[in-house]
Image (cartoon, rainbow, N blue to C red; front, side, top):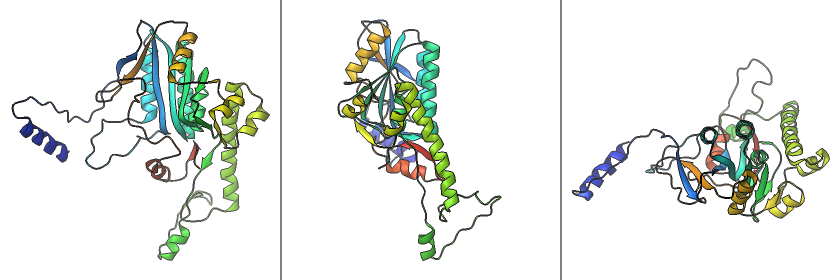
Length: 321
């Protein structure tokens, strides 16, 4: 807060007689609608699914940086869909996906929110994949009626992963030990302070396998391919756009304007305005501008890694090479 006041004071000195307005308020402001292309009454909402998908507030703030307030991705995503649901002129939704995935729950919640939106509004949903739409990013794309992959997209990575750390050896070297007082033998399974037993590893594997089959079932149901085929493709491998098309994981190759045209045709409109929702201070001049500066799409950022390792293991639909 102090550095903002200093900046404001210096701005007044430099500005002389000119009037300078500086917003020091940290509050999150309501979303505004902005047209980025096209005309007409009908609207196509362009919304982003980017970065690491989680229930947490995204990103980190560097020293002396003053970005606009940011909200958790799930909150922002639901907020945009709720706003669109109230607007009868919104005739289609285009999901721009640039994500390696995220937590199992965040990916599933976003999928569910899209299903509820479709049930309420009965409008087409088109997913367009950018650099990466892997694992949880692909899981969210499965909610779309049509999936368009950029020719250079990397997708797939259908599977589940859980990362654990074992610091027991390091702690022993520096003379530090940790102990847990627990109600049951398995209560601290996954603790970084001791090695997993084979029985505990089997328990974790059973959870991983169950969550994996939930993902496979989504692929079978939404892409209408045999379970044996989906199971073969769901070993965690990634695919180029061409490979994904040949395996029927996507519907066509194209660019963002192509996805918008697909949405228009599906909505039965010839003219439509492409709209985005944004907050003050978010730059949205064209449909290539994203809602906020995202985390790197692939494979995963160090900020996300730090968040994932605290307080303990998490189950992830994420591409993590």
